[in-house]
Length: 288
Image (cartoon, rainbow, N blue to C red; front, side, top):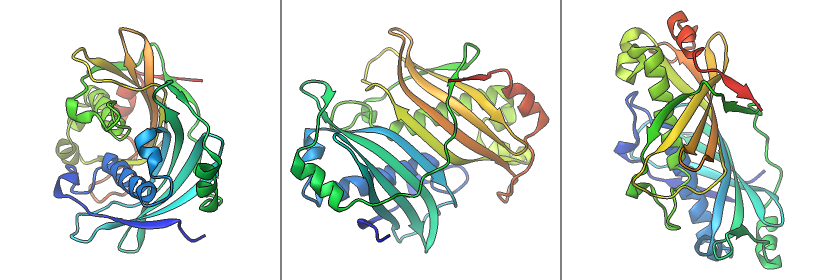
């Protein structure tokens, strides 16, 4: 099916991580850039100003994105359109290669009442005119960090906020990565940094990341908390579940599921090291 839009997003040198590729969290930033431009150039541009919230992301990473002077291409489709919600599908393409597939579920939100609102007939018609079937992504199961989850303080920076005055949805990918690194570095100090992990003979590659947004996150001086646990460990991969929580109020602001593959220096999958496997079993997740 022909995309509803094809949008070019320039790369920045600071988008790269320690492995020399665009960081997995930055891919979500590219999706946001494409989505915002798609809305601003259409009849529903006012929705961005009145309030459109991201309910959830699903991102599947298929190939690394390298730094180049040429922009990446984001192909965008509109999927299901409901009374107040709609789904956007994407492909991130570099040099003709699909590097990522993704889905974003959004809702139209009234900040005055603090509740979702129904789209007007004209708003819904514009999305419906662009909509079509989207290829689904494999479900990752339902998990939550258990009582034995790994915990770490999480500080929100002022620059994490978006135009609505809340933490931008993309920043949660960073929060989940920080939580994951804190836990894995305690399980195996050699994996504390990508460069150190490379010296140990293995690297972690994120191949899938889903984030569900449950409550808005505000800036404050007191730290929030990240909680992360191991849902499954396979021969060469593992699935982690993480939460961003408010330890003062007990609120869960977001929950994420991440699938990582253990690879050698060339990126080929290898068995998860026994020492790391045993260490990560210290923090088991619970099925929901």
